[in-house]
Image (cartoon, rainbow, N blue to C red; front, side, top):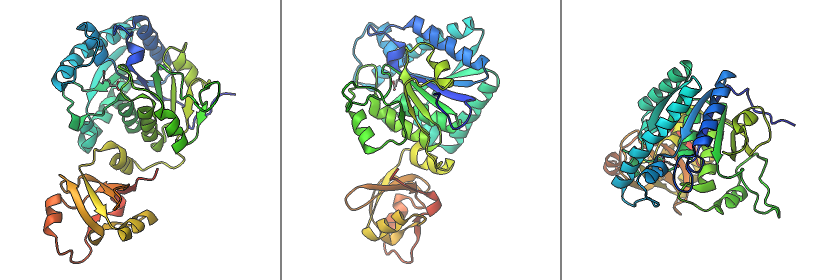
Length: 362
Ligand code: GLU
């Protein structure tokens, strides 16, 4: 029986990891990349729009310089990414050309999602490229990404892109066949995951990180949560599986399928919760915590016990309880200096309005 997607797939984000792109000697896997580009062009001929999120800048840069390990300092890593990204794009451009198609490079940092205007600009650029039949090839802008504005891994980047362009599917191609069920004796993969529960997360945390993959399965699941909350279903499959893109699009049961959430998190709330790096923390008392957990309540100043960070008015902050457990995220109506000034807590000013608040239990 074929898989049923919630809607026909007209737009797909395909993420390819470094292990799919480079050999263990950190050289490009040319035949493989040719095949992936061929599959993308085939999908486009069948009226499916494709955005490719491709890693590989760092591994190809390392390979080009004859290095086998990542340098620990940021500037060297950025220089290496600069070298590798041009190699990567040259390969893609050549293969797309051979398929009589075009591609273009889009480099993003988390800042671009943090800022609503830039976020909209990026979405408009994707739209314009797709309308012209150009495949956007997205990567993190490693050459300028500092810790502050880093995504950390391209799984997350691909999920944010898929959410922002309202993709019908996110396909993560990796060097594993899917999510392995480590509890089964024959280590089969899960064919379908309805919900990322704690057990599923525990299964995933067993994966080790390698030079090729930044976050392993844990990072993939975190990314899948982002996408499924925007009602984008996801598939993790092996990048080398034959004709993988067409087969997944046809509904064949390759890899692990993660169903979209029944309830869609509104775009603005999705952005507050997943798209922005929080700038501070508000610690609240039990009363405020209980009120927030009931839902539909604003966070009022008397319930805020202390705060930390460097946030301005309208920045996203995390709300934590006395045991430092995260309970929500939201947009603060006050900067940290405002909070210092309104010491006497007269009245009950709203620190976070309920429309700007998203509970973390998800
Ligand atoms: N942006 C990095 C690169 O192109 C990869 C990050 C990742 O693999 O998640 O090398």
